[in-house]
Length: 605
Image 1 (cartoon, rainbow, N blue to C red):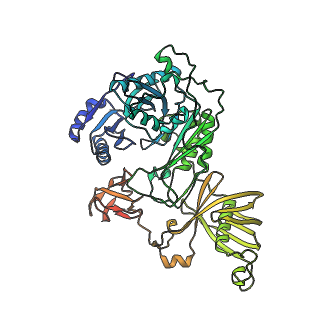
Image 2 (cartoon, one colour):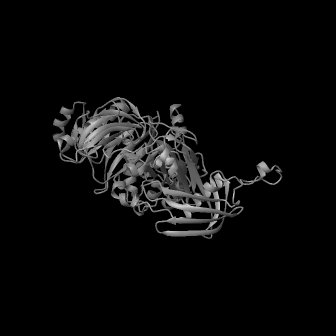
Image 3 (cartoon, helix red, strand yellow):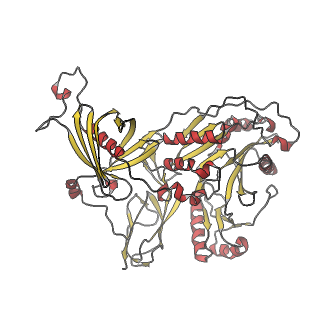
């Protein structure tokens, strides 16, 4: 392209798989390669192919084209060389009908999952003034070349190994991440769009556009990061967010005294123009769902955006971690805690960014889940005991039927023993014994595999239906605890999804504990959800795209069996054992609920 520093072979390909396979030898010139929908966005219709075999290439191509056709109504794809250590850097441009085009500086959107951005920042860290000006000048040239009008984002791939950048595409709209640009410029980009649409001249010339401080945006997704970021759906049972300081961006005055010697000089922003301005840390939350909302399966799983701004990258990152620690969701899986871990990762703090950041730092971003400490089990048990045991009504109510708590034969001392377990793997339950010693005080004994811990005379009360106030281990804590009851139509079993879950938010972390069902209840319900090891179940509510097998077929471990689609994303279910297909519980085009058994494979062993 005339406005890129370098270019590499790209070829637009039709839906003919045979044609693609033949052309690929000339186009690709070696693996890995990237297959990408020409009408794509949000990582849809995009696949990376590392395996040079024709079968692997064909499978990736077919999947990308199917996803592209459903998302954009067009299955034409590009095949291009895949850069191993790229950064995703994009420039926000604006153009009016009078021939004026400006850059509102760049954003870094490198950290991605499923080829979709999850955290963005502005300005892009580590760029020299010359490189920033070069990026902006190329973006402006791109807009001018096509006589562009309005808001646009010119996206580049930046090669970390060579410090060269390549034009990727232009998005002819405001991006999801445009708030970070608003936060560092103090400009309302929607207002700018309306100004341009009205035929007005751009509000500011290039030399007057400020760049103040640093901003981050974290996208909150309904998904499970520890299950390959698969999207989740359901009801937002509980939602609590930190109080925002701003609805829009803080305002900054335009630069008026910057000397202008050339157009290139205008594209080197003054980073000291607002040094005398007091920049207070700010928080902005944009969300489209409230508590009680239903997260469906037909749309992108993003439910909110957390946007922060500070005087520099360090302060903004500190604000982001704090905001995420106070963002509490129950009802669907989210990436909130993953984003918090990401924002605290040493390599991310050091701005060592690349699109492969997550797989490169996988072990650091997904550490082993630690066993909850005895204090946490004690708080969960106190919450249940206080919730389920009626307390005397306030003074003034003279009726004994309402003023007295329950009466017990053999004495009025309230005692309760309950079994709790973590929500991850099937482990031995932790037994917690709670004894009410006097009103508002409890002795709590926690028995784990590591031993027994007793907390004596613990003052505890429910200050709200979801807040436990207690003093335990000489520390006064207010713990948010949200109960999630199982669906009423699901029989109880040893599967944790059929039991009550307690979601505890404390110390910036979320812990989920399961209240184990008693044995008598298990005997009535039976383990209705148990299945053989060859059974494949829907990991989420999904649309069945393709059933690749028939009853009686022999399959090998790892073979693709079912293709599902949820929230515009395809998921391939593969056989976990080698054997014979015994039963198929779905068909092409059918909507299936989470946990439904789709294929049963009889182990060949």
